[in-house]
Image (cartoon, rainbow, N blue to C red; front, side, top):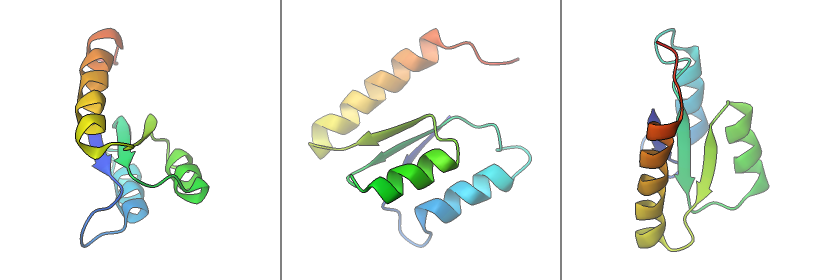
Length: 82
C-alpha cells in the first residue's frame, strides 16, 4: 500500500505512478493519493494509473489524519491476495 502526495519534490506525481506501474514488483500495489489539487486533469490521470482513491486535502492537518484512519480501516476490511 502506497500513500502518495501529489506535490512531491524532484519527481512529477504521474512519473512516479508510471514508475510504480512499470515495476514488476510494485505494479499491483494499492495506491492512495492525497493532495490539495481539485483539478479534473490530475484526478483523471491518477485514476488512469489505477489509484485506489484520490483524496483531496480540504483542511490539510485534519484531512491527513482522516485519511490515515480511512487507510487503517481499509487495511482491516479488505482481503488481499496471498
